[in-house]
Image 1 (cartoon, helix red, strand yellow):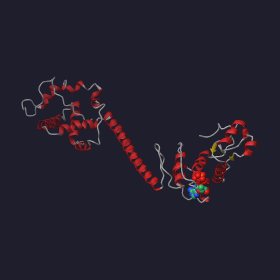
Image 2: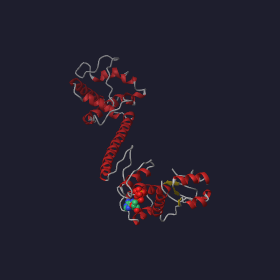
Image 3: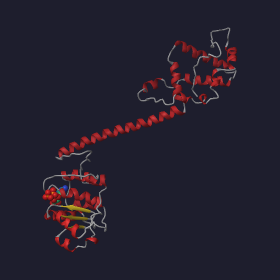
Image 4: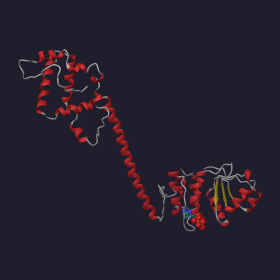
Length: 331
Ligand SMILES: Nc1ncnc2c1ncn2[C@@H]1O[C@H](COP(=O)(O)OP(=O)(O)OP(=O)(O)O)[C@@H](O)[C@H]1O
């Protein structure tokens, strides 16, 4: 254990002086060997563990890196450790060595150079339990903070890239933490695990690139966010909401209506119905258009329907007269 307690020997008179020829080391040590001050500490745990000295101390190794390098462990430290163990053993054979080393330590002290600090620092470095574990904790905290900073930097870079991309495609957004727009339809697979039938259908329909409204609306809806989108006629709004709808529904189920699309005109609902059918090709989704005949003849209690497309008035009629159940819709 690399510890050197430097305390004045108040209890036992004069300190050892190597230059005092009339008081050589052996008799001096004999006087003090009976009750040296460190014996007071030996039975206590303090003698074996210096961590009590440093508990609660946190040392910023990053900030004081240069100082740490300067105070790295030196031979002096091992010397002082030897002195300590020798003094404890009380071995007569090594007392000479003790004398020499003690004298040299004192000389250094007198000169007032920095080695004293070195030892003090090494004590800190070597105290096994608390100092080491607090060092580890601090290292962990530093690496976490480093990761956080890195993530934040990367996030800011991504925000910048998104802003440039939106500007290029004339996309305007408002809202908090808006997801990044789609670069391509392939991103549907990498980012959202889009089923392959849908990607195949998009390809077959000749949709190579998403339109601006699709680029931004699809990620927003797939992230479970609410969205109010506005784009010119013929800009591909239908795919912008049908594609995430199909992805969220995943598979066909026979338990009732799971999604509703409301359109203000019958023509538009018929157009959306056609688009839905094209996009859901190869998947047995129950997609229904609320026509007059359906409203009249259908038994809505056993209505296998994943997506229902209707105008508001027809849906209201169905709810009132046919007790259509919309409670199963997926969020
Ligand atoms: N990414 C795309 N690439 C090429 N064509 C597309 C793409 N998305 C949609 N289309 C096609 O563009 C046409 C218009 O799409 P859509 O009906 O969805 O537009 P809209 O914005 O909903 O129009 P409206 O406002 O009239 O309802 C459709 O024929 C559709 O198949």
